Image 1 (cartoon, rainbow, N blue to C red):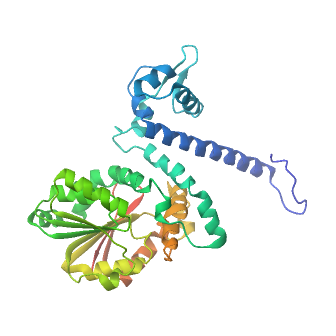
Image 2: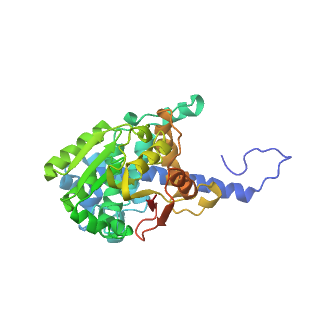
Image 3: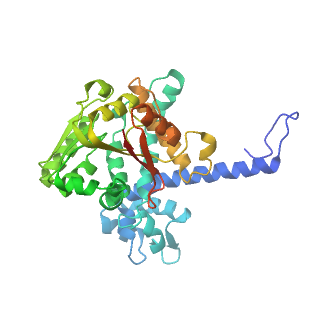
Length: 366
């Protein structure tokens, strides 16, 4: 269809605007397809194998990493026309420019953006389930997302873990010193436990507990703790929908949550349970998605389209699948502050880190 497509003569029609929108849709389709192929390049290790090497043929690249040449050749076609990989047609060789490798390989200093491309394929796998929910209501349960915890662990591994000790913990004055002396810490929605295991290894005098709904994630976290020799950590598979009623008062000196509140079935119950669980003088440190609660204020968000999509296709729907509230990832700063306040936190500080364009860091005290 082109800008000359039929339209109602009684409705004002700007042909130039229509042509511009048509081009935008085509660009979007190309970008979406390329994102899927970037995910393949990341998962197969092709980007890593091509980084820092001389221009090579498809056969040489395939042999280098042990892949099937025919698939590699077709993938290289997408990468070439997508402007990600350079191709010398006369020599039949392909090369990944150093300037591109700096953003899409596992050695990328500022974070590997190809990690995020995995969300396209992951969320696309449940499109049929989500479409059904549009018509019938309800949600898509956690177990339908086979790789979600794996991808989230890789995501947090380059946004949270590198910054945890030197940048995130110092947001709470004196916290590092207290951890060194020994305190009780809970991480809510711990996933595969990468944050908890890092803290447990770094601060052996403190004790750590991780809660998560996913038994698969908890099992993975426990195995990693054993491999690291972390004897000061415990992981528990637990549904926190009634945490406000089942929390142990004053059990923890510090409680953390990383990108976990907005997809809970009952976020207010979780937050009130966190408030109840804090000992006197305790603090709650929450990382959650950066954005506004109002669509109009997110128009210039650098990754707003991606975050709303992840929210609709995962965060919101997994909450609704449990009969929950369905806040979604883009619940926003305004609503987050409202929820923290209603849960019993009166002193709330909102922090940002220069390396992290997608999160706020809330420091909450009663």
